[in-house]
Length: 154
Image (tube, rainbow, N blue to C red):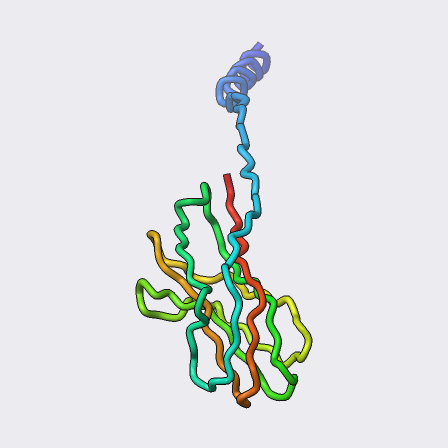
């Protein structure tokens, strides 16, 4: 009888101390990435070795125009007229008077090539931008077309 009573108390303690499991329902919301493009107007070229503003390439850009803005990349079609040397291109933020961080592209190709940067840094607000170019060998650095690739996440 003593053993039965001890076993009974032991079973009761184990049952009472067992954790209660409550199922929890979780909802995972997946965000969808979308890509859009913002064309850069104009074209141009220079033989200058210093950075030159390419006339007609000015445009306004504001991140807030793209819902869920995440990242931006510069994509240009460019060439160096004879392919001897190097040509450089970049975005310039006229509003703040600075080159756009991460936007510099270079080529030594005599035929048009499509080149892309990594993620570029654009400031908040509606800012005026333009394309700048320079040539290291006084051959024509030629900007043909360009766009900004925008990645958004909603």
